[in-house]
Image (cartoon, rainbow, N blue to C red; front, side):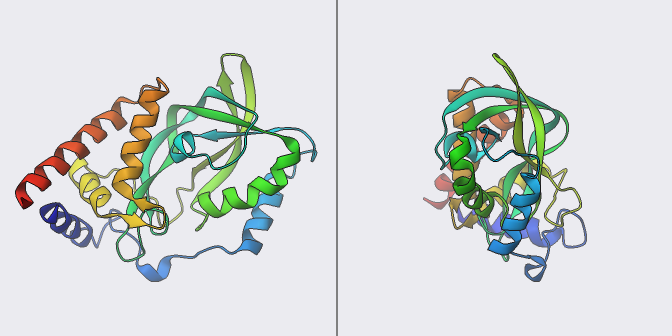
Length: 230
């Protein structure tokens, strides 16, 4: 593991002049409850205050939704794909030693889970959801069509804000492995987050070849590092 962590530092420090470098710690802007309240109000501006609301999960929301729901369906959205393209400086990393988290980047499609939230529970659930998903406002909440076996439902989806300084597209496999191994934030290790997401997709019979290949590489590199340090 020491070898992997040493490699992690080299990767992050060597890319200082490129987009592959994480923003400096002082660039992190943590949003407060007042900002979250305004963002929630804007997002729910078209809601009638009574109807149930659907939320689309594509990362940790698949295996740890942390809210009560009436129904869950396998769902697919179009125009975005699951990508490990966001520096995580709170949930799965720190400002000085960031990890990576999934977002929805432009192009393709993504299969995940759509959760139906009872209308009476929406007001209580949204602040906690925003605190988890929007600590630094790197996502843009959108309403997108979620295609399920029993019909299309409009779902709240957190998509990547490509103008955010945390957006990091195009990392190589080597860079991704090193960063995932180094990240550890308030919700635990970045490594666990990526592997749990990959395992949850398999359990849900959702095929994501790119993520499964990354999971295999992560497990292999973890085993190699353990052998080197023993």
